[in-house]
Structures are given as C-alpha cells and as structure tokens.
Image (cartoon, rainbow, N blue to C red):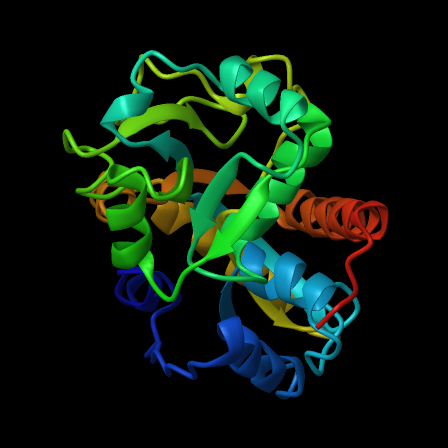
Length: 272
C-alpha cells in the first residue's frame, strides 16, 4: 500500500523487495550498506532498530549511526491477556500477585529476543516484579496453553484469539488504549507512566543521504499517510497510523534503545 501510494507522489516506480530473516536484521543490514542516494529505503520496526540491536550480540549495523530517519508510520499495540478463568483481573492484581510470588506467575510469548519478551521486561521493570517467562514456537501453542490455564498469562497481538471468549484481555501494553478494546486500560494509564513498548513501524534511508533528498521522501511519506484510503489500509493490519517526522523517529530509537539496554543490565541479561 505504501509503495503504491509513494509511487504516485514521487512519480517514479517504487519496488518492494522482501529480505526476510533474523528478526528483520538482514534487510536492515542490506539497506545500511546501500548507496546513500535516496533510492533504497527500509521499512523497519522497533524489532529491527531497538530490540535486535540490544538483545543480539551483533546485527551488522548501528540502529542510529547507520540510518537517516525518514519518518514514523505508527504503533502496533498488543495486549496482556489471560484465559477465561482470569476474568475480572486487573493489571494491578497481576502485579500484586507477582510481587507476592516472585518468579512464579508465568506468561507465554512467541520466544526470546522478541518485542513481546521486551514488553514483559518493561512491565517487570515498571512494576518492580519478576515473572516466569515461558517461550513458545508460535502464537497458537501459547494461546492454547493460556486458555487452558497451563500458563497464567500471554502477551501477543490483537488477533481473533484475544477477541474470542477463550481469552480475557487485561491491559493494552502501551501508552494508549486499543481501538478494539476501548474499555481496557493501557499499561501507561495504570500507574506505569513510563511504559512504552517498541512496537511500531517506520522508514529509513542509509546514513549520509543528502538532507534535501531525505526531506523530499519524508514529505512524500507524510502526504500519503494523510490519505484516508492509505491510513485505513494500514490500520487494518494492526498498525495505528501516527505520522512523525525525522527528529521524532531518531529520538524514539535513541531513547528506547538506551532504555532496553539499561533494563537488560539490571536484569543481568547479556546479548545472545
């Protein structure tokens, strides 16, 4: 959708090339080494520019120094949920239980070094608690175990499962409430004011891209994101469109990267 919209605004072809693998770091590394002429861009996320660089020993690029920020696209909220037996629980209840039983209250995610594990680390740090992290190979087995009470809670995206009767959504893990669950408080409004998980999407160019070129691309991105049909199509994928400029994106990456590194040091976690 973005490629098609940008193509019309820039009046030249915009081709999508998928370079998958290693949590997006293969694609990020490719763009970091591309010519800085504005013709190679990177659609990345908090995983490629915050989580992977902080939690992996080497990703082959510096998330700040090797990229020229073009613009922020939006956030992708996810939720903290339990099975039907957790109905009525609040995030405060969960944190109180976790403080009383350090390391015994369990939550499932789709694995280590993911945005969901980082969200849990942020929750532990902000709430001054210690959970038992149970990593799974995929959402489905984790969701089955949460609904069956094998693990206490789960962290994941807003999908059909969390909207079903098999799950009870306790909190949105972000600063704002999710559109799909307007009645459910966000972690950021329940006493965890500093909570801000790196779940978002943005666009970068290689470092050294001429400022005028970067400004032209940034302007084109803001223009297409303002169109209702583009905004609606993106939000249908789970990303809430909240355009931001180059400075906002650079500051976001710098701050969240440093924050996660600090939390990892406090938790005694080394990059893997």
